[in-house]
Length: 292
Length: 325
Image (cartoon, rainbow over all chains, first blue to last red; front, side):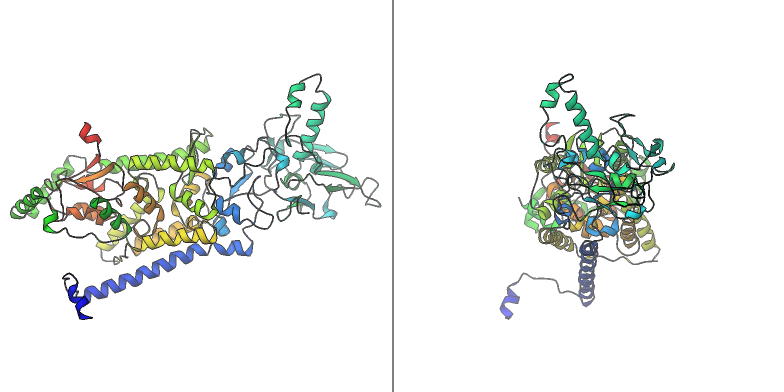
């Protein structure tokens, strides 16, 4: 055993003080490693608890209950935030743990109304975290709408709606075809006067698009046959998303129920525009049309 | 090749070693003998320092660097704020007039966690790799990273507190950064989450600047307080994997600081201002091997040593270019 020691190149003898210093440095370094790694792993908690689960932008790589792929592929750069014309996308903060810096949508504050038409956030994503597999709003699977509080729903009470859907101070924007087909305007600048409240149906981007396609088809021969013929994929949504149905023995002769249909993509516009407080219709993020 | 391996070994945490006498070139041996014989006095050294300061170039590179760092980060902010689409995104990934850019470490974490790479990410990563290969690797740290600037200010307070003996300096083993690098790579690979991004002050600060502040800034504040009261430049020196990634890139970069022992006064000022003083080991009497010693991969090319050196013994060099000129 002594041979191996004597074979080593000559080393200066280490003083006890020096040895004590390096022992302390080693312990400090171990503590630093443990501390920093633990801090980073705390980010796992919100993911496990599910409190980081949120309504994500179109194309997010997730199954309704599993965001793992989405969180792993997102590079947290916010390019999707920058391209959204209605500024619907926000970035999650520290309390979302591993979800920090990932994009989400607070539908009640500002839903995704597909004002960009081309799903710009998907095109902006550099990592494919918002998958490029979808081409049109109707291909999206963000969530699925549900009439959460039927008693709060104005239509269920047979009531109409007059005035500003979300009050004068509401900051959210939507696109109104009769104002400007291409530019969103504040909802607070667009008063309604409806005999029966059908805002969730009237403002549904899927329903609006279906109506546009129908009118284009109707005038296709006269206007632009080629344009209509070019339509591929789901540029025109193949299925309806929401409609009002009469309620038998409802709160009045006019009582209507909003019924969510197969075509719903979970964009959240119904939740955003609903004038009831608390909101009557919400988007479930743990469901999509493929899973209900 | 030995310069390259030595430079990488230091990047991974090994202490620089004193070269054996036969490794030192005869010319440099002569220089060392001559300089040992004619040591300058403290008074002479102080006179040189004052003369250097009087020239007004003692913060030339710092000014350029701070201006660049602030300009790059403001370009991100302004681009979004005024919607001019010049530099979209954040430091983790962006588009410069439409061209994809991806931070090498952020891209690496995503690739390890997601295990699937789309073309845009490849383009962005290669673009940035080539960019920092040409510009010096850890140049990113001192010329772009917003945390570096805050950390520099924290360092000033820290050094003042230490000089007043209000607090003590605590060092760590530099090898711990290599451990962090491996651990965070493995965590990304095994958990499938980009774990490091959760605590990266670079990403947090960049997003806070562009998209508005959030609670995550508290973590950055905690790091800064640690650096003020416990350990000088702790994050950049001992933890950050981003620095390690760019250090690897910088090991083969033509842009670097070069040391000339012939001009050196051996006052050691460069090592006192340097964040990574082990790279300046050659500036210790008897350690330089050649008449011109390129500084190693861990160097952030911040230029503080170039600024402070009263004898111009440390200079920026672009390898190959100086010969052409």
